[in-house]
Image (tube, rainbow, N blue to C red; front, side, top):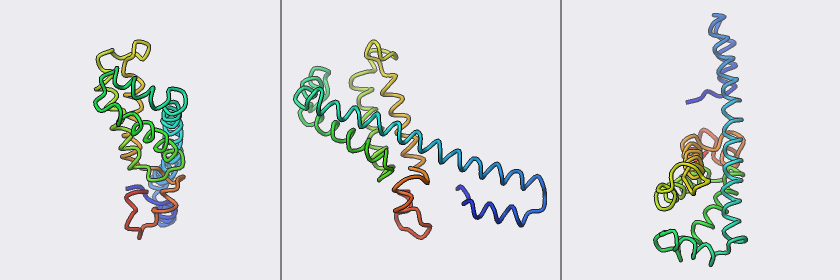
Length: 171
């Protein structure tokens, strides 16, 4: 568990050993770096997911996405296409804002694993040949966000981040 900046400052004041003070300062810096890294990952992944969801609605259309899914062998393509398009659009926006981040990130990771195994695995690694490199990277990013949470710069932290919140697990 990561200590709060106030707890780290208190530890720095109480500890007289210079080595311990340096360690505390590094921990504070890592906390800032972790917050920055989570925010960058969440916003960029959210943007990419939202863009792909938007594309399924507007460029390909849902009917076109259904036909494409059916051609690729996706089961229940008529249902899967609008569900996936909605998940990617709404889930991507939720990641950008940091709203219910763990839930949406887990669902998006599963979405990408489905795409990997149902469509892209047989084409090899590289996206130029229809391979899985992009969906694997998106799945890994979404899984990392689901495990780490949204970070301090998120709606989840503002809504659920208090230490006494019963919904703190969402933050």
